[in-house]
Every structure is written in C-alpha cells, then in structure tokens.
Length: 266
Length: 86
Image (cartoon, one colour):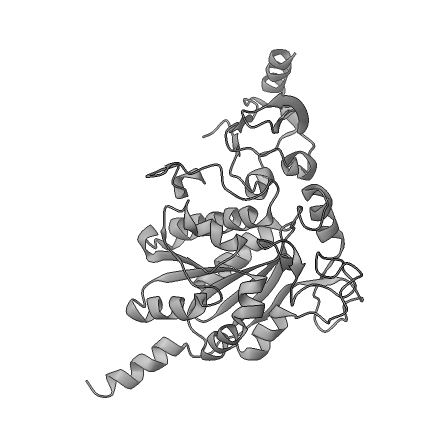
C-alpha cells in the first residue's frame, strides 16, 4: 500500500510516520487503503475522486503529511462542515473523514449529529481510543467508567458516550463498529460505507499503548476478547464492546434532494 | 537450513515459498505482526534498525499461507508478503 503514501516531500523524508509504535491510527489508515484499493479496482472510480479530511489530534496526523491523495487538515471538530462544503462543490467526490473520538464526540459533537441528520454522502471513520491521546491521556467523553487516566487517577466516574448508537439515532444510513483487532471486517465495512449513498459512520475501537500503559499486542488481544458480535436483539453482557453492523438502511441523500429543488427552477 | 526448507517446500507443493519483506526504515518494532500471525510464521529477533527498534524475522515461512493479515495489521506499512504467482 506504499503507492498511496508520499515517501519524499519538500521537507525531506516523510516516512516513517510520526505515530507511536503500535498505534491503532496507522492500522485504520492501512485498512482504509485496502478498502480504497479494492474500490478503485472493482468500481473503476479514479483515484483523484477520493478526498481525505481530518481535524486535529493524533488521527489528523494521518493525512497531514503522508497521503498521495487530495487531503485536508482542518479545524478541530469542524471536519464535517468542511467535508460538506467540499462535497457541495463537487458531488462526484468520495470523501473519507478520519476523526478521533475527541474530534467527533467532544468538540465536534453537534456537527456530527447534524451531518448524520442531513444524511450527506460522507464516510466517517472514527478512531476511538477512549482518551485524548495527543494532549497527554486525559479523560474523554468516550472513556469507560472506572478507568484510570492522567486526569482521573482514582478512576473515571462519568458515563461514556456511545458514538455508534448516537449516529444511528441521529439518522446515519450505515453504522458499524469494529476494533483494530478485526482488520478484514474493518476493510469490508469501509468498502460498504464508501459505496453507500448517505452518511456512513464506522467507529473503530483502537489502542493507545502509550497512555493505557500496555503493549500494543496485549491491547489488541484484549480488544478481541472483550468484543461481542451483535446478533439481532440479543443483549450484550455488561462491560463488553458490541461490534458489528448497527444499521444499514436506505434514505434519500441530502445533496440529491437539494439538486431536485434546484432543478425545479431550471 | 532455509535453503533446504525451501527446496523441501518446492518438492512438496510445486511452488516457491512466500517471501517476507520487512522495510527496516519504517518498522517500529511493535511486534503486532509476530503475535497476530495466525500461523506463527514470524518471530522477534535481536536485529536492530537505525533507530534501535527490534525487527521481526521469519520463523518458518513454509507455514505462511499468504493471508496477508500482517499487511493489513501493520500500522507503519513496513511488512509485505510476496507470493510465487506475483
């Protein structure tokens, strides 16, 4: 997949990436490349039609330096408004928004809800590692109850956000959650999301080995052990992460509906 | 040993053994590929790259069935498997 990365740049060598050893963000980018590679091969969509947009955080480092695609490194939490603008300017684009949990769930929460509500043709990949990685491992809205971070040394007492359920409730047409220990399922979900006409939200539970103070391998194994596949309406045991497809529905896409209104006056 | 093994593999299957390529400049030694390989075809080593990260090496590539799980799992795009028919 090195063909999708820029190895040399005006500032000298760009690779290896700036991320810590064993970071889940690199794995998500790798999965996205595999999905895009298959889509370019199977659907015949040109590489120029793909645009990556990120906000601020560790996840933003993925597009800022290395990509051989068109990409935008934008404002904290405001990835979705900028992606909406890019899509309105050229509805042919396939926009992939890579955000972190702080970007989507905390500062950009409102933008996230309303992008899902409008049902814009975006693919949102949310890398959820459960804390604010770039600023030093502080507690985030997605941190589980009882977990120790650098600002909650005696355990977190707040309830956490379930971003996938929020996206489903807000009206996204494709919602799935996987972990970095499920690479093939993630690739398949990203392919479905890019092909879906409407908002696709794919949450990827990821590891932050530096701030959770474990080795990447232990964290991957724990993610695999603690996740349970969704089966119909079966209840998920307490403390486990439900993974799988949350919803896959058909709804009118906003830009198409808007174009119909414009066409009435032409 | 490795030459003998690959000769034996060729005799058994009629194919060349899959080749492992590690990019020493990109690898950060997180050992995800070693531990997550379903066939345990890789092992950690004492070989260091320029930044001091320990690179993985092949343990027994005759076990590798080119599932490419390591390629998708690598966060740093540092590993690739080359098969006979490529």
